[in-house]
Every structure is written in structure tokens, then in C-alpha cells.
Amino acid sequence: MAKRILLSALLWATCVSGVMAGTNLQLFYDFGSLNTACANQRTNRVTTTLELFYPDPWGSTFAFVDFDYNINPQDPNNTPFMAYTEIARCLNFWQKTKARDLSIQVEYNGGLGLYKDAVGDIRGYAINHAALVGLNYCLHTKDYKNIFNLELLYKYIVDDYNKTANQVPLQFTFVWGCDDFCTAPGLRFSGFLDIWGQRNATGQSFVFISEPQLWYNVGRWFKCPNLNIGTEIEFSYNFTGQGFMCNPCLGIKWCFD
Image 1 (cartoon, rainbow, N blue to C red):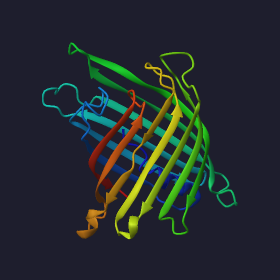
Image 2: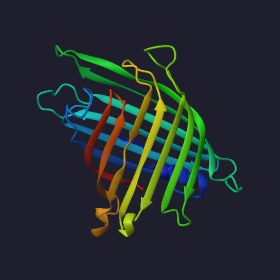
Image 3: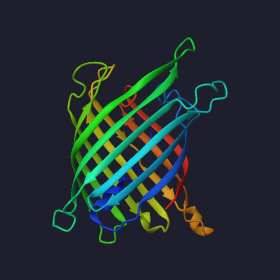
Image 4: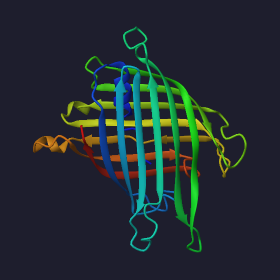
């Protein structure tokens, strides 16, 4: 599932005052198949992601919501089949001090989904509530075109499978964003990497997910700087399924601000 394209901008906003809010809408087609994805990430999947952030004198607020759609013509009644949201608040009351790059972060994750069982009945599943709190540290070049952020968060998951949802109740997150990547004007390389510990129905306790993205501002050629085209590759291990998964995607992004 797509995540955090604007998170680098969010964390930049905790370091710099006067930054305007930003919102974008992304549309991805997932080329994953049943051989590379788990059952609820089926073929013919389309994902929309709406992201936004708002900086203020006390920090920043970031949020996104994902919807997954099944566009298989043989299964028209199961679309959309997944919704997921995250909202994160960065607290920074010391933006004019030497510690301005360090913020306190609180976050909520959660969602739900649908799938068809072996006999064709529609059933549901939960993406359980998760609460996170910890620190993030934003590194950036002087011109802010390159942003790198590190987070270390305590993560509590309300788990259905047992009373100890987290084997290791910590999450490490790395977020990056690079404008004019490889000195190419209009090219942006961004993404995130999450690692955390979690018990689930199959007994896994180590989860990894990363979604690097490459965007090109194609609209710059015809006076429409809001329009971008690009790609995303979803790498994960023990995330919504057992073992390693790799799904390439193609997408478009519209930046409203």
C-alpha cells in the first residue's frame, strides 16, 4: 500500500516556518500477480492515495488515506476492497533553537478490507489499530532539495491473535526525498522504509516494507506543473502475508498546491 510521499515535506515543515500546506492525489496500477502478492493484493489492482500536511508554529500534521480497487471484470462486486489511513502529528516548540531538527511524533494507523473466500463469499479483515510515539530527526541540505528523515517510534498494535501484539514494540522509519535527482530537472526520487516487530496469524515477528518512488514533472513542459508521472516498487517481507513480495506500479500524481 502506498505511503508517505509528502512525509519528507512534513518533516521539512517542522524545521522551517512559513511553509504552505500541500495536498496531492496519486493513482497507481499494480502489476503484481497472485505469484508475487498475497491473496488480498490480487491482480488488476488500482490504488488511490490522498495525502496532505499542514505546518504550524507548533509542528506539523500529516495524513493520508489509501483505497485499493479490484478492476477484475470477473469480480465486479468487490471494489473497493481495502481502506487504510495514517495520521501523524509532529510536535516542535523549539524551532528557533539548535535542536530544531528534532521533533516528537505521535501517530495512528488503521484500516479494514474485504476478500472472497474459496466458495465466493465476501468476508472482512481488520488492519488493527496502531498507536506510535517517539522521535524523528530531519536532515537536509541547505537548499532543502534533499531531505532525509530518521524516526524511532514505540509501536503498540491492538492485536486479535494474541495479547502481545508486538514481539519488538519498536518501529524504525527512514524517509527520503531528492529533487532534481541525478541532476535531472523535474525528476524526484522519494520513498520510505519501515521495519518493526509484530506477531500475526502466521507467527511472523519481523516486518519490513519499503516503497521507493520516482516521479517526473511532465507538466512543466506545457504549463501544468501540478502533473507528474512515475513509478513505485513495493518491497515487503511478512507484510500482509508470509515471505518476500515485490510489486511494480505505474502512476500519475496531481499536486494541488
